[in-house]
Image 1 (cartoon, rainbow, N blue to C red):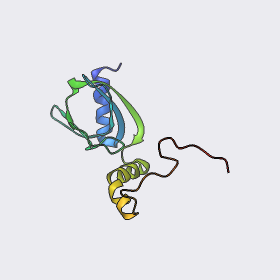
Image 2: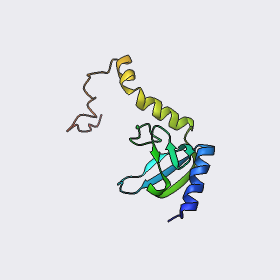
Image 3: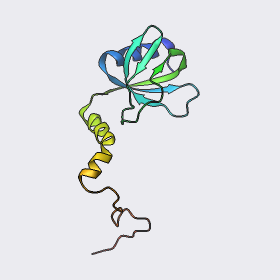
Image 4: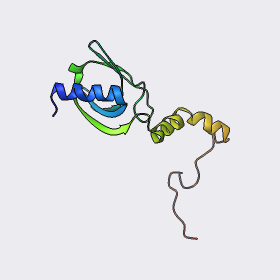
Length: 118
């Protein structure tokens, strides 16, 4: 487990470089994987979404709410994750454009589907 000083150091690095952090908050079951947008007086402002594009319920946290962090070399603006977030945000639009809205899944995706040898 990291000290508060080490945690704060990782937070500052993330705010400057955009590197991804896995943040374990007190009284939260799952950690948040995102990056720090900015550090203000006694508040830490996270990016609006997690690394995969899901909106964060609470972007503003304090150091006292953080149990631990893991810093990764991966940057939040990595092109792969930017594409993942874009696709997640535009999935409904993409389905409409490809005429897939309201379609049933293919046979492979239907419940009870079996593989057949050809």
